Image 1: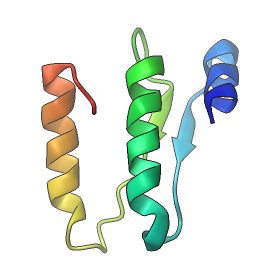
Image 2 (image 1 turned 180 degrees about the horizontal axis):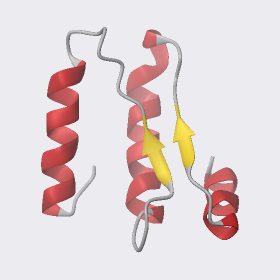
Image 3 (image 1 turned 90 degrees about the vertical axis):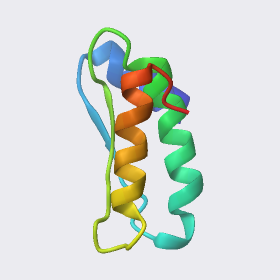
Amino acid sequence: MMRVCEKAAESKVGMLVDAEETWIQDPVDALVMLMMDSFNKERVVIYNTVQHYRHDRLRFLKDCIDAAKRGALH
């Protein structure tokens, strides 16, 4: 994952991450948050997805926004 994110940053392209399966979403979210914290310093490189069909995703989105405002994504 790190190498893919590095390549996206080096190539000046964005990378959108989507877990596709709910059973793996939490660890994917944690990993993406770490990658966002590492690579989204001067511009947005790494993007996460939010599946709003899940009842817990609005809270997750609000928590992500709050963390970004504090400067701490994880």
